[in-house]
Structures are given as C-alpha cells and as structure tokens.
Image (cartoon, rainbow, N blue to C red; front, side, top):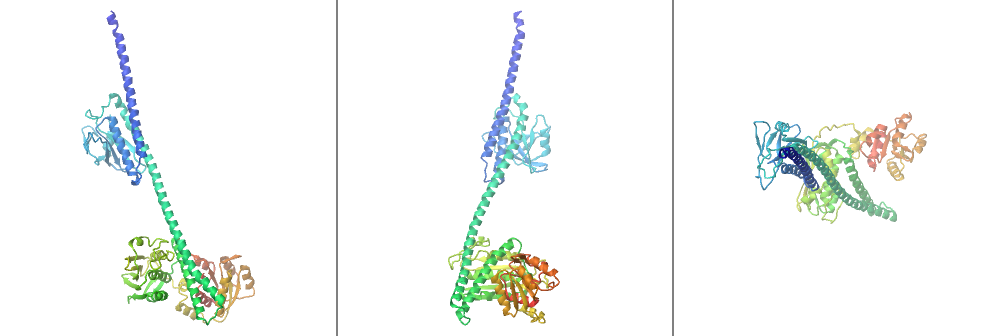
Length: 606
C-alpha cells in the first residue's frame, strides 16, 4: 500500500523538477539574448570609437559596422551564415554586400543557402544580386529569416538574412529555449544597427566639419600670409614713387622753380611719372575689387588694333631703352578692328609688357597679333628668365608673386596678372601661358572678334569719355562747339578740396575761362544769385550738401534748368556714372582728373 501511495509524490517531484528545469532553461535563454546583445553593443562601440577618419564619407567605418553585425549574429545563432543585403531607394534588386566570416572554418567565398519560399532554394555568394520580393517572403515565414532596417535618411535600406539552422555548424548548437528569442535578437540587433549608423553619421559629420574647419584655417593662414606680403610689397611700391614726388618737390621748392633750367623740367617729369605709377598701383587694387564685386564697367566700342598696339608700345619704349632691350611689333596685315573696351585692352597689354620688361635683362620683348577664325590672339613674348612649372601654378592667384632674379626681390602688388586674366574673361576670352626656365615666356590674350550680346551705342557718352583725350574727340568737340566758343567764359567750380580746386582753376584759367571757386553748397547758392555760369563743375561729396540732391534742386529752378552741370567726383564704382546722369548731370568725370579731358568737356558744354 505504501509502495503505491508514493507514486503521486514521485510524480509531483518530477513535475517540480521539470518546471524548475524549464525555468532555468528560459533564464539561460534570456541570459543568452542579453549576453549576445551586450557583446554586439560592445563591438559596435569599439568600431565607432576606432572610426577611420581618413576614409572619405566614412566608408570604412560603415563597412566595419555591417561586418560586425553579421559576424556577431552568426556567432550567437550558431548558423552557417548571416548575410546583409543593401538596396538603393525604390530598387527591386539589391546586392548581398556582407556575409559572416569565420576564416578558420569556412571557405574564402561561402555560399549562402536560403529558402525564400517552399520548393525553392537560393545559393548566393558575396556581391550576388537578390530580389526584394524574396526577402519580403522570408520576413513573413515561420520561423522568420529576414529583417528589414534603414541605412540612412537618403533612402538606402538593408536586410539581415539568416540561413537554415545547421547541426554541422562549428559553433555551439542553439537550444530549443533560445529559438523563440531569435526574432527578438534580430529585431533588437536591427535597432542597435540603426543607432550605430546614426552615431556613425554624426561622428562623420563632425569629422568633416573639423576637416573643413582645419582647411578653412589653413586657407585663412595662407590668405593672411599673402596679404601681409601684399601689404609689404604695396608699401614698398607706394613709398618708392612717393619718395621721388616728395624729394623732387622739395628740391624745386628749395631751389626756386626756373622754367629755363633743364633739370627742373626733369624733376617735373619724374614727379608726373611717379604720380602716374601711384595711380596705376591704386587702379590695380580697385580693379580687382570691382571685378570680384561684379562692379567693373566695360565700355564696348570698335577698337583700331594697329593704332592701339603702336600706342601701347610707345608707352613702354622708354623703359625698354633704359634696360637695353629691343621692342618688336608684328600684326597680320588683314587685322583691323575688334569690339572691346580699348582702355581695358590697353591695360591688359601694358600689364603683360611691363612684366616682360621686368623679368628680361637681355634680348627682346615683343607683341604679336594674329587672327584664327573669329578669335584674336595678342601674344606678349620675351627672352627673359622664364617661369618654372611650380611658379606657374600659383602665378594667377591674388597677391602671389615670383622672385625677380634681376633685382632679387618681389616687385609690384601681385595683382597685374590676376586683373589681366579676369579682364580677358569679362571680354569673353581667356589668358594662356607658355614658359620655360631660361627660355623666356609667352602670355597670350585670346579675345573674340565680336563678343556675344554686346551692342554698341553710338550715342553713348561713355565712348566719348573713354576717347576724349585722343585727337578724334578733340576734333569732335571743336567741330560741334565752334559757334559756342568765346561766348560765355564763366565757370562755377564747387569743390571742397582746396588743392583740387586750385588745380582745376589754374588749368581752366590757362584755357581762357573765368573760374569762380566755392567750397560749400551754401556758397554755391550765394554766388548763383549774381552769376550766370556757362558750366557748373559740381563735386558730389560736400561738407554741407549732397551733390546728387543739389543738382536736382538746380533742375527744378527755372533759372538753372538748362545750365550744363558736370559731376567731377571720386565716385568711380560701377553705376556711379549712371547715378549722376540720372540725377540730372549732363556729364561725369572721375578723380584723379584727366585735365585735357576736363578741358574738352567744358569746351563742349560752355
């Protein structure tokens, strides 16, 4: 009886043991899940911390993250293979981009066997194509074989794939209690993967920002050094002609100017030449600023090429003679005219010619003009020192200069070639360089014969202003104003700078005009009560008034509505001339004043 009565107790004990074993297995499975996830997280963190910043866009780091995922999941799941497939936005076919690897037990190119649906089997290798519909079917299978995740916000997506469980796996076999947790492992692994990829993007973003900041700092440092060099060179270049101006002026003042003394005339020539050199330096700086701000005015006109080239060479003839160099000019006979800004074309050629003379100690410097199809080529060549390939690479950078062997130092501002190149581009052309050390250089300005969308306006005063100092404009003024000459010689000059006012007054007095000089707007109105000037020369910036408003006030006054008013001003940026003309001025001339041009203007309107 006792023997039979002990059976329920034995069954109870067995049931309790079975329940305890099941509970233990469940706890072990959960520990396996958490342990696998912790190890995965640790590997991902290590991967992020050791990100390779030298690879563009973090390709290396992202690849390491993907490889860590498939390796760790293969190890945890005890399957033959875990793979990762990548798809571009809205693509239906992707690529098996990563497969788990255990080099000691698996062949170099493993074959992934998956079953997307009953009755089919896929054997895939690394970089093989895989359809998204197969992965979607595998994600809905029981048990699930594929899990979806997003790679980045640009639409790239990925799929994690596991092969069939295999008892032949070299890894420890997975227990039955762990099987229900596989889906959790894969889902949370996808979450970890998404977080790691976002962190990777953030790390890479900041790395890129740091790299850009470092590059920006390097560029700032380079610019700072170049500008320091530019300021030092410019200071030297400005002080040199200033020294001549101040020194020879002092000699004239000390000795008393005598028109009959030849050396006094030489002093004046040096002063004038130095002043023009100063103006050239300032113009280079202003031209580059205007070009970079898209404010440079181009006055399109028909240019007589032979005449312009002869004129340019005459301007450098003296410098060439002083250096013992021969000048050559060669122009194809059929070349006559082109449409361009004659002043800017002359500026480009002078920049190249002065550079050629500066770097040539013996031999020749020349200008050759040819035509090829609809393009003109202006080539300035020399037999000078030549330019090395290293120096050629930086020659067209602002403030960049090369050492002049003739004097052992930098000369000029380092802006001439930059301005020349940009002026050529504004004309629809470009600048080319051919040079070899000790064999001379050839700079070629290539310009179109007829620039696109450039319409000449024959009535545009710009063309008259640009050519006013030439004989043709002088004739124009004389022909059209013969009847008006000597009728009214009274000129009212409104100028607050006493030196400029005295200069203009002396020059116009020599031309036979009676000049009344005032320094303020109030004085102007006072003199206009008793004076009927033939022309008013009005500065824009006055201590007690704005010239643009003053001319408008004059135009609404019936007495002065038709009096010619010329703006003489230091405003010389793009649009300043149009602003003055729109305000009511008849004409415009910028400082420093071209006195012959001013005289022609006054003659034209008086």
